[in-house]
Picture (spheres, rainbow, N blue to C red):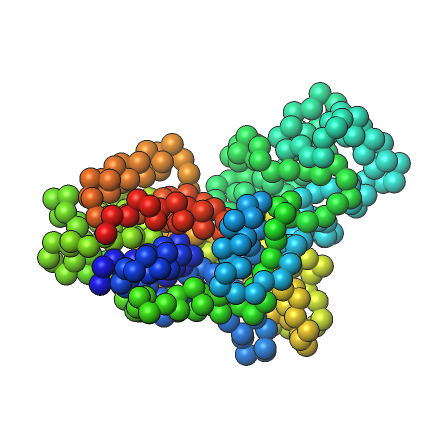
Length: 379
């Protein structure tokens, strides 16, 4: 073994493949019993392909990243559409002119659409924060309606805070559309695997220099003592690419890094459709945030429908949870920077990925990050 890679998700798999093609013998460990990390998918007992850890679609503006994904499997175009249920009615997200038509009387809707076009002349989008801060009362009330009935409620549940404590400034990136156009992303390349993500990972890891060992808890073998990386209690001399949570590798010596986790409640109904959009937010529901209906991503010609209801909760170590979203605060980012500095003192340790970097990555961002790491690894 020339290199040890901890984690068999997108980051770990891509780094393992690139090093293997350089002639390195790479061993990949993953504590789960499957490859693919959070992109893992499988066919359920009803014959529907589902994503165990929440919905994943690949989208990017970068053709080189698109080409890389195409090296290891066939893909088909898939443009994700999302929605929300507000006051008992479905509307597309990002919110658009359909939203206005749904919640306003015809005369008021027509006037609001005209005013938005004039106020944000030449623009296709604005953030909800911009709309809420407009000096036009009609426009401002529209933004406040969306904030009160969607953004504040959804954000409060997602991050575990009271709705009245949601700071509108954190929503400065959330767009509103000034048209009837639908679609969650605007990237040129949007797709899903023709077969499955697991099939793509099998091809990625299919190299004579890669050995995958599943069901291995890396932290039972790796530790850090006096600034040195140990493997089974002995000084580790080979490079270790680590994609797990960095605080856990260091025994949370500087305190724990906060993550939000998710609990999925899986359901199947003998109906053709649960909701009009594959992924739909339910901001006014009591405790869950969204529902993903998997027969629609990708579209599958099956009877009945399987869907997952998402309940967010705070991640707790050693309680069988998965850390999904880093909770980014001044304190947590300060703490993460300390762990990063500690890792940089260990010459053969290479943290990389969503957990190790304490950052939220889309799939294309995770891929780009993994590819950029290759040249740094000294074997």
